[in-house]
Image 1 (cartoon, rainbow, N blue to C red):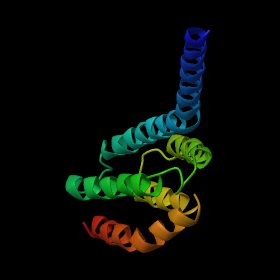
Image 2: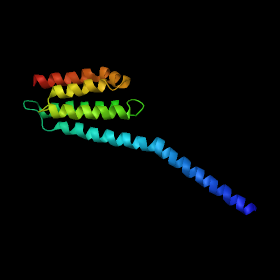
Image 3: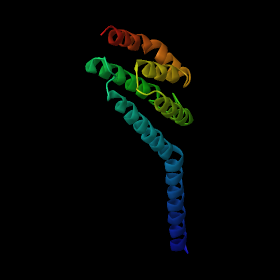
Image 4: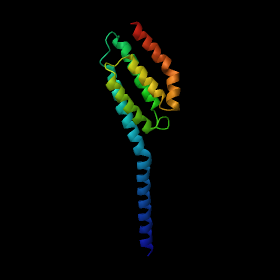
Length: 145
């Protein structure tokens, strides 16, 4: 009888560990995987704005602006606690709509992205408020070129 009890305890323990591991994966790890997969997808889309360079704009200056904008996105959506997955999906929808209507992509498109990042929540607004001057400095240099 003792042998059966020991195997029962082992079986129940293994079942609980399996349940706990599955629960942890589904509630903690998988949502993070989805969040960062989506973040990479949008970052790739923003990186693609580097080409083509708008007419009359220095390629290096344009690269600087697009890189700065992509970095802003990455910093705003750094963790789900700062900007939610649902907000990231809304941002992506708005971004795709904007990119479809703004042809060709210009500095104003990038400025819109910064304004939209500020609408993602308190962290997005704080980041945008703190860093927009750097973007505007680059935009001024692009306009002066």
